[in-house]
Structures are given as C-alpha cells and as structure tokens.
Amino acid sequence: MTNDDTIQSSYDAIVIGAGHNGLTCACYLARYGLKVLVIEKYHSIGGMTITEEITLPGFLSDVHAFGYQLANLSPVPIELNLGNYGFELIKPEISYSHIFPDGGYITMYRDILKTVKSIEKYSNKDAKTWTKLFETYKKEKKDIISSINSSPQLLSSQIKKMEKSVSEKILLNKFRSNIQSMRSWGNEYFESEEIRVLFGTFAAFVGLSPDDAGGGSFSYLFSSIIQDEGNNIVRGGFINLPLALAKYLKTNGGSIITNSGVEKIIIKNGRAIGVRLENGKIIGVKKVVASSTDPYTLIINHIGEENIDPIIVKQIKKIEWGDSIFAIYIALESPIKSKTNSKVTYSPQLHLSPPSVEYLSKIFYECRSGKLPSEPLPIMSNDSMVDESRTPKGKHLLKFLVLSVPYKVERYLNNDKKNERNIDLADTKNWSDFKEKYADSILTMIAENYLPNLKKETIKRVVFSPLDFENRPTNTRFGTLLCGAVTPYQLSSMRPIPELSNYKIPSIQNVYLCGSGSHPGPGVSMAPGRNAAHVILSNIN
View 1 (cartoon, rainbow, N blue to C red):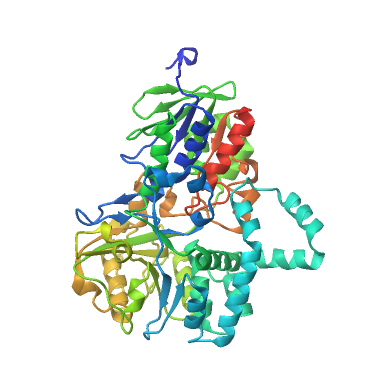
View 2: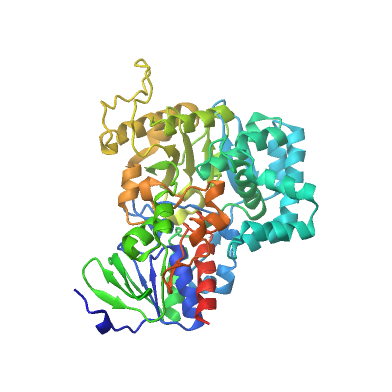
C-alpha cells in the first residue's frame, strides 16, 4: 500500500497517452508554463497516427490513419509552428478515386472544375449539384471550424443561437439535414447511383450504414473538406505529426516516457494526486491529469467505479462502440494497375465498390448480424505512390482498410457452399483461425474486379483482425477506430455521455478527458486535445 501523504511530484500535469490528441493537449499545457509528463503504454508514441514497418524492413505503413483530412481545419500546426519541428504535408493534385467493377471511375481533384468534369461522365445535373453544395460548404466553413475547435455547446444553447440568426424554417431544415441518413441525403441531391456512392462512402468511414441517422451530414462534411483542402499526406509517415508535437513539447520543458502503462489514477479527497504505473511505480502530480484513453478505460479502469457517480458509471457502460475493422498491409514489387485507367492508381486513396447504395447496406446488415461481409468495402491507402520515401527504391506499399466487420463472428459467411469465397468457420469465434482465409477472399475480389496485378506484385502481406487491433495499446476497443460510435446521441454535448461532454470529470476536481472519445470525435483533428487543454487552463486560472 502507498501512503498518499508521501507522494511527491515535480510535475504540474500528467497526460495519459501519447497519441496526437494527448500530445496536443500536453503541448498547450506546456506552452502555458506547466511542467508536463506524457505517459505512453506502447514502446513508441503516435497512437492512431503511428507509422511502422508492418510488412518488411524499409516499408513504412501508416497503421491506422493515412489521409490528413479533418486536420486541415485545425489551427494547431500554425499555433505551435510544427513546420519547424519536422512536420510537412504532401498535397497531391488527386484527392481520391472511386473505382467500379466495370472499369468506370470518378476522381476528386483539388481543383473543383476537374472534379466536376469527372462527375459529368455520369451526370451533368449531379456535377452542378456538387458545385452548389460545395459553395454552401464554403459559406458555412467558418462556423464548422469554430464548432470543431471549441468545446461543445449544449443543444439548448445551439438552438437559441440559431434562433437569433435564422428563421424557424431554416432552423428546422438545418436540424433535418444533420440527422438525415446517407441514403436519404443521396437520393435528395443526386440522380446517379455512382455519385451517391462516391460521396456516401464517407458515412461508412465513420461506421454509419446508408440508413443510419447522421450519415448524410458526414458524407457532405468529409467530401466538402477534401474538395476544399485536398487529401493531404504527412511526408515520411503520419508518425511525423506526433513526432513534431513531441519535439515542441520537449522544447517547452515537457517529458515523455514510453513502455509505461497506467494502472490507476490515485484519488484522494476527490482529487488526483498521482498515477500508479503497471510496474508499480508511483508518479505524483500537482495540478492536473488528462487522459486520451477511451472513456471506459479512464472511468472504469483508471479512476475506478468507487470514485465516480454511479449514474456516470452506468452511462459509460452503455456506450456504443461501433463496428470493428480489418486491415491488410501489402508490400509490392511494382505499382498496382487498374482494369482500364492508369491515372486512378496515382490517387492517395482508392474506394472500391459497385455503384450501389444497396451494396453498402448489405455490408452493414451482414456485419451487424455477426456475419463476415461477403463483399466488404475496401479503402485503399496508396502509401508509396504519393510518398516515395516510405519504401525502398522502386518498391511499393499499400493498405486495405476493410470497414465494418463483426468483432465476434457468430455465423457463416453465407450458406452457399458452392461459393469459392465461402469460409467454413466451423463455429469458431476466434479471428486468428480464419483471418488469413478472409484476407484471401478479399484480395481475390479486388484482383478480379479492380486491380488485376495485385497478387502478382505482392511480396508480403500482413493481416490485422479486430482482435489484433484491440490488442495493440491504442484506443481500438473491440477493434474499432472511433473511440465510441458517432451516432447522433453520442456527438457534441452528448459525447461520450452528457455528464462528461465538457472534458471534465464532475466528481474529480482535476481529471479531464482529452481524446477522441470526446467532442468532436474520431479522425485526426487534434481538436479534442486542444479543446481540453483550453478547458483545463481556464479552470486552473
């Protein structure tokens, strides 16, 4: 047992987790003059923005995040002058392409006129509609940036603010569009199924099926941001973002320790006075503890139910986490080729699916029924085509992120024993028993329908199942990417739960959330870390 009265500290603040949000929070606290320690369980910093040699030496894969998208709206790189600490973006002309099995494709460019021309192959009307929608986004951009990079407002406050500036009709239409499903939004604005899928795929990025509430607004938001700012890539790997943050932190007197999991936050009289590491070491803290871990880990494991209001404990245990993910990392001898057009393979990302919203709907139905999706949605990150520094000279590297697979596989892939892609699971629920077979079926589908030379050029592949992701010390609870599903009732002032929406723990004076389990949510934005730091500093004052 530890005598709490003997705990000494030379640190003003401890931040748990050295992902991009934890490091961002730490940087702003250090900028203010606090002496900060960041504690990371993994052997390396980076969290969900980590880059590693997953396949072979010299092949640098972004393990989770790849495209620098939402972060384009962040003031952090400018405020912290991260360019002086090794952070640099590559800004490709092409942002992404969606390829269809018949060889057709649509490409989004940084230049909207080129995007419009690509859309016109399928619909002149939809091309004009996208131009109008993008113009609407540009008018709303300032407010969108403000909402992301500030603490969430209560719903009542948001409504009062909007009531002062817009009519009731506009207010209701805005509310409607915010909760509209992807299918409803696509049907309302576009006549071509190809265009509906082109933009609607971004709802699937955040785990929303075509019929889930809120999918339309995510499709609109992400498509607009990428159209406006591009699908940029961090030169040398996404790891160079947290590395730049770490250099800034150390320049301002902060410290980072790795290979050091936190077991408990030590609470005395409703206040954190230190943390106990998994190795038994005690580190004291004078002013504040901020955690970028997922909300369940923070509240239930690190703080402990005995220190938290039972209502909050109950709410935390009811958080929905969303669908799991599956990934295939591939080292290549030569570049991939598409069936009909070589230009699309220069895209930073490729989305591969038939031009069918119903196809996307089937994936979610199968996943949520405990089945392996028979034809899943692969999102391809084209690492080396955009950034040659990520591979040995002449070689190539890519990743397929397969969205929405079940955490526990309860049923067969399908009942068609004649289907070559059918996987006999033999009633097993252990992903390690069949993940390679599932990867085989996915790569066969991709080679047959989209990228014919994929298997021929493969040097080595590595497969990550939901359990593999969960077993890494990051916020991939249940093998998910979202740190809490982005349903309308788990966003803004309801994220992760209403009682914790302003980053602060009500019953503990000086413990805060600073990860993507809080507003504005998942994706690389640095906003949860920055927002939390501002709340912390206002309370310290």
